Image (cartoon, rainbow, N blue to C red; front, side):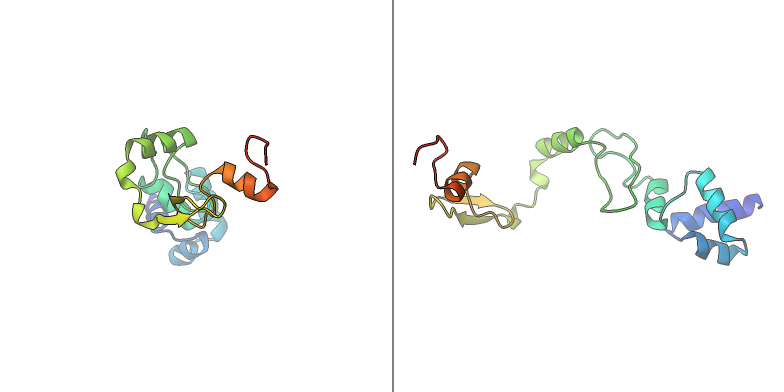
Length: 139
């Protein structure tokens, strides 16, 4: 493989192309392309490899530490749970508050704001409704 072909492989991986598509375009075998990509840190699914190589979504939003994307699920934005919590605590304005709605607790009837399909305003109300006793153990 020539240096020009190696450069083309890198460009094609940045576009999210797979091993077979690159091999067909360059007239190489799939195994040669795959082995080269593994040796140069471009292994994995094409789209995840592209995200890891481009640097976008490649660093933690909070601390800037390098993140390697997994092959499944949505792209990671934070390197750890600690960074995720710290960033959201510092940026509450980024939260989509329009998705939250006013709901009424199925146990106590109190109104509360919540996302998703919650039925109770607190864990205590959930326990009381589910097990038929108050949180402190009394009926």
